[in-house]
Length: 202
Image 1: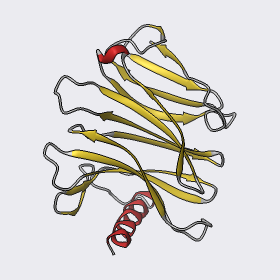
Image 2 (image 1 turned 60 degrees about the vertical axis):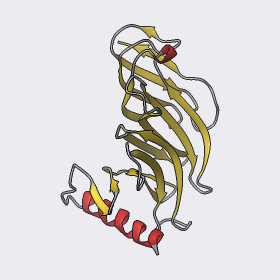
Image 3 (image 1 turned 90 degrees about the vertical axis):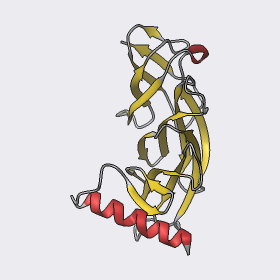
Image 4 (image 1 turned 120 degrees about the vertical axis):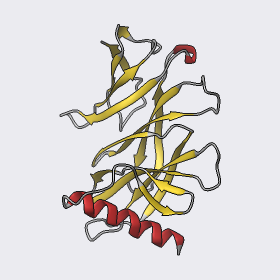
């Protein structure tokens, strides 16, 4: 019953957004203690995917669980499904989602420790559209945790296989070239290999 209720809730939110309806920017209250963040949506193989975060009930300080949902629809040959991707302690995650027929790429900014001095980091996962399993996990973090990284966007290149991730940082990401507080990370053949990304700071 609860999963059906959640699916209806998520679908309603997506329809509002897709049709130009106004969706509250400060999130929705699904039930006491659980708050959904703004949803991001992408399409792969005829299926609509949504990435969302929700505060885990009863957690103080809050723990935000990040979940990818596959919605049931007439154009999708598989049933509704979901997969948990990560959690963020205290800090509300920023989310980004892109997809094509090769797969779904979900990105997020998280804080993984209760300590006030612990950094925020970027996680990126490739989720297989049919099986809803994580096929690849990578991330971006300041070297030795001496600073924060934050994700602003994900994008798939015109070749359909290269993933780029852009954002800001307050330190040096291991292996980066250039300098500055912004970065662009490029992952060639993201959906079909585990080739490491290259990071350029500016």
